[in-house]
Structures are given as structure tokens and as C-alpha cells.
Image 1 (cartoon, rainbow, N blue to C red):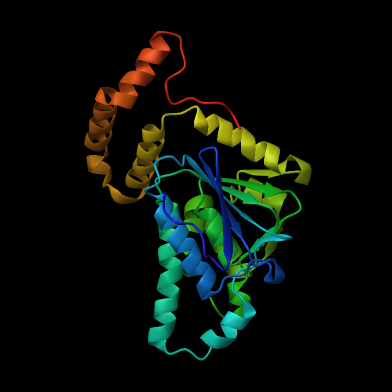
Image 2 (image 1 turned 135 degrees about the vertical axis):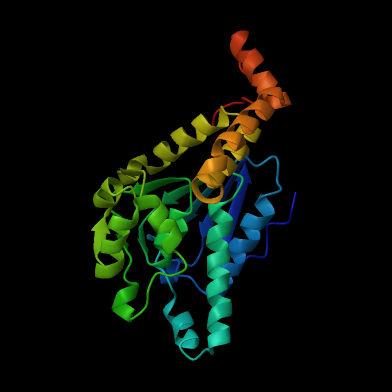
Length: 268
């Protein structure tokens, strides 16, 4: 297994096929700086190739999930050249794309409020479960900026009409409203947060690991990459290959024989 130590801004715990990543800057509400972006990119990139890890859970330590850009970081960025600003912006954009296209399912355990880039970070996850007391906002316009690097992923979650309103107004919204807008999947009481996350984890663990990887790839290709005129060929070949794969054969035989497939283990 790859080395998952020496991170200054995150913690990672690996247990029972699950990697839990904690944003670990609670004193600044887990706000982004270049170190946090680099640490997250490194850990998600390494987890791509860890076959024994089935699920990634992303959460924050302290009262907030992620408060967007760190104020001290912004003080330094304000004096950057164009080239320096472009480099920093690309790092954040590359992190968002890495998580969005990650082969493993990523659950966002949103333990508290998310603002700006924090909304982007949760938006690139697959399943978003939030504390009902959390507040969300895309307030970049209040600073004379725009949510540029995160905009494709927020728009993918909630659609252009709703994104237009949130981007333009900078309005802060409750978890219940975020749920209605599909910005998150579930808003739950604080004492139900871990229970709800574990329910989704246990459902995913019953499924074929390779099928999960392929279905995430399929979602990205069908939704963002492949021209509509080619989709039917792509999807037909995909299912034909999976039916002949070892995992597909095992899954179909297990169903017909009324037994559990060999990848199903104990629940967490």
C-alpha cells in the first residue's frame, strides 16, 4: 500500500476497505490553501491504485466542512502575477477534476458549513450527506471574483438555472434548501449523519468493485465526453464486455444460484 503519512493539512484513516479523509485545519474552518490542495491531490491520486480500498469518505474536522479560501492565502495571492495566479488556479481545477473522475465512489460527509471552494469540493463527490445545520454559499461575487474552477461541477449537480441564481446572488442557503436544489443528496440530523453515511457504505460494499469503477467511468463518458451519436455503440460494447468479465460471470451465477457473490463481506 502507498504511504499515506506526512500530510500537514489532512488526516487519513484506512480500515475495512474504507479510506476516510479528514480536512484537518479546524482552526480556520478547513479553508483551502496551497498545502491543503496539494495534500488532497496527492492522497486522491494514490488511492486510485489501491485495489483493496473500496470507498472514500471525505469529511472535515471541527465545526465546518470547508470554508473556501484561507484568508492568509488570499493575502499572498493578491500580490501574485498572472502566471502565479494561473498556476494556483490550475492546481485547484486539477484537484476538482481528479475527484470528479475518481474510479472509487466518494461520499462527502458534510459535517458543517461549506462556502465557495468548499461547495466545489463536495460537488465533485458522488453522494453528499450533510448535517441539517450546515449552511452553503457561493459568495465569490461579493469579493469581486467568480467560482471559476468549481463552476462546471456545481452546474453539473444543480443545473444552469439554479447555478445562475446562486453564482449571481452569492446567497447563503440552508441544508434543507440545498437538498431541494440537489446540491446535496441528504440533509440529516447531526446524530444521524454517521448512520446515514454507513447505510450508503454498506449498500456500495454489496456491489461488484469493477462494476462500480466502470459505472463511474460510464457516467462521465455518457454525460460529458462521448457524442450522442456514439453513445449506443459505447454502451452496447460496455455491457457485452462486462457480461463476459470474471466479475460479471460471478455476479450473474451468484444471482441464479441464489447466493452472495464472492466480493460481499461483512458490513461495517
